Amino acid sequence: MSTGGRPLARPVFPFVDAMVVIDLPDRRVLVDEPRIEEWGIGAGEVFEIALQNFMQAIIVPTEKDSPIRFVDHGDGYFTSLLLIPGWLSLFSDGEHRPVAFIPDERNLILLQDKGDGVEKMFALVAEEYLGSDCRVSPQAYTVDENHAVIPYDRAEPLSVAARSATAQLALTGYSTQTTFLEHILDENPDALSRRYGIEYAYPSDIFDAEPAGLPATIIPWCHGTASLLPDADYLDFCEVDSNGQITGSITAPLRLAVETLGLAPVPGLWPRRFEAREWPDDATLAQLAASVNQRWRQ
Image 1: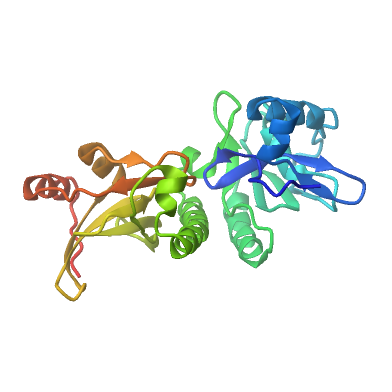
Image 2: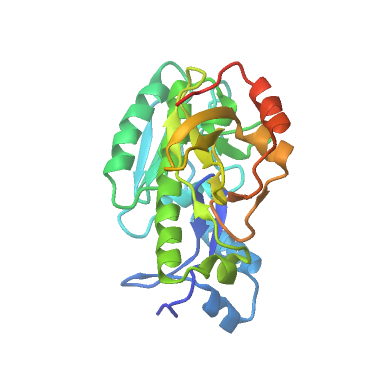
């Protein structure tokens, strides 16, 4: 039985964690931190043992000409096949990249990256993802030159469908986290200090946007507000009046803002958020504004 502690989890893809379960005849029990303390071993060893056990029942795909769907009826763990080094590459025909979708915990879909099959599958998976009660990801996954599994948007950064899936995954993941952070702060305003060793900061929301004609994500940071910024594509520096209304804004790529301002991720918080407290001076804002061809004004 579960000890009621925090489940053991390890990030494997953006917004997708691997977890370990004890597979009993009538149920699955998540392995949590108190349990591995009882066992006297570290988290890394637990994941390694679990992977080795799982690899003993490996499934090798033989049909490669048409899409394959693996459906888990309770004991398949098919979505975890992507964690086995080199497994997804087995579905390659030598000419086309293998592509996998894991819309929810029960379904693994494999197909070749040829024609418009992947683009059509994105649309189908998006519906399955949003309609599932155990959703995992609307994103596709493929392999790099070293056969490591990577999100599809890293292989095809200009794919509108892949970028849209990335944005949807970020919106869903951060929405869940924002709800959690707001809940613990409502219960105890010092919760961030106790859990993460930082002073109070507002957990910012994340939104979808298309500043360059491609699906993306953006977060607002209002002048005078200490904020926990999600890892988005763009950061909107917002000036506000005495009533808290936005009077103007400057948009910059988040990566550039993080580097320029020296923003650091909050230790132990996943998905990661950057701690933003000190508002940049006018010269720095001008530098950030000059890095893009577009300013967004409210």
